[in-house]
Image 1 (tube, helix red, strand yellow):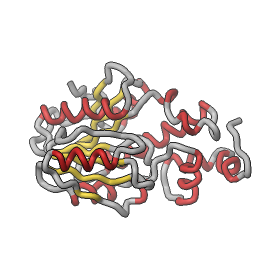
Image 2 (cartoon, rainbow, N blue to C red):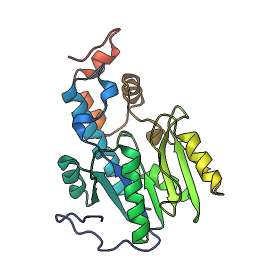
Image 3 (cartoon, rainbow, N blue to C red):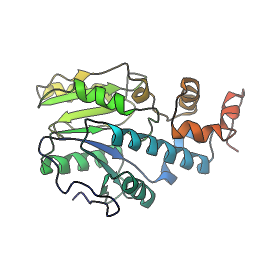
Image 4 (cartoon, rainbow, N blue to C red):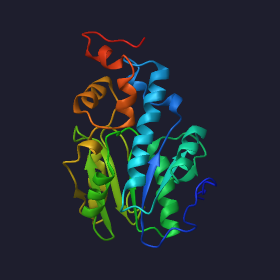
Length: 241
């Protein structure tokens, strides 16, 4: 069941038909391994935590969401969720983002929510306005709304009504399967583009370079600005120290 953090007053029940955000967060120590050529394990952990808070802050600030469910088994992520008044769904094991989101949307559907909007924890430039744009484009049930990753292959945001209308996938080639599965159920997915914050997910060193080049205001960029990582990434050869 969805657990309510004790440090914040949360709604006792999901309002029927409401929209909820879903944020899966793995153990920071196991996150962002593809950044290993450029960042140390400690740096990856700190970057992951900064990005996760950026995403949770955006979800918490979106006017179209009644609340957010953070799916995790990590104590740091649970404490972060409590700080933002988010509900926590504890994972039985670290099974990956897609199973974690599946657990959350199933619980939200049982609770009577009308829609779920899932984001990964590595899109630090996402804003509440972008999330609300996705929700504004989202139709009445049954409905699926997708925002692709910048490469057009992955999916960085999925909105679904009912919450469990289709299986949620997060991965490098998930955009086409999402469209295929929605259409197989008779749902023509709505595609929302032009959202640079959602489109930029940070997985690889080149993504970090894009984040630094794009700029903006977020915790991840603020943390990066206090390190020598930008200089290392700008060098002809960079390696984790």
